[in-house]
Amino acid sequence: MEFLEVIKTRKSIRDFSSKSIPEKILQEILEAGRIAPSFQNRQCWHFIVVTETKLRKQLALHNGLIGKVNFFIKNAPVIIAACADPSQSGTLNQQNYYLVDVAIAFQQMMLTAWNFGIGSCWLAAFKEKKVKKILALPANFRVVAISPFGYPNKKEHIYSKAVKTIARSKRRKDIKKIVSYNYYEG
Image 1: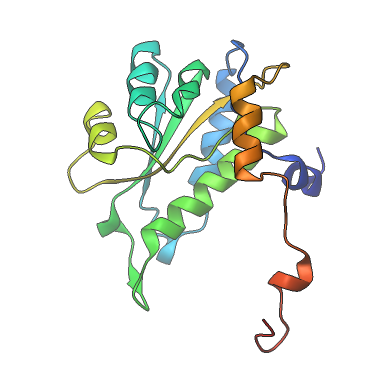
Image 2: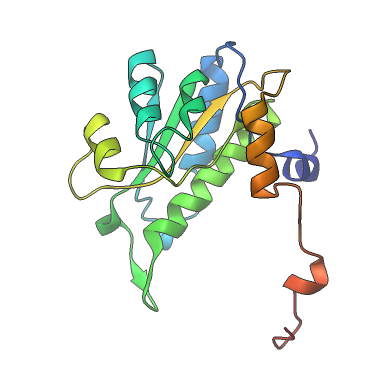
């Protein structure tokens, strides 16, 4: 795909086929995260690639606002937890840059995946303590986001349609409402 087409067509996928992701493509996705920019190039991130069915189910049980809302993630062949060691990043102007660092890297991974026809869905509603325990993360690490990765299922289930409607996934603000030149023109 052309780069802008990748950006414009990427969407959150909640229905996955059972087709596995080839190792070569998975490595390309991970490489996209590895080469992302970060605070003073400290690269504070650590990505945990979960492929075991049992672990994917455990993660699904501790995901979503009320626990099982995002249970769909267990159906993806891969779940990646985007984590960070905040002490390996920095703080500037009262901003903890580990969050920015991991967000940039994870977005690059998601766009790379989409370029190969692999969908993802950024998730931030999870029980971090439980996820850290499941993934055996050190105490000082933070889980910034989780995403399932997999080829989209051709048929979208009713759950996916409902979430897309509630989330207003297709709505985008007009460029004039989000951009000002030289000074804020709200």
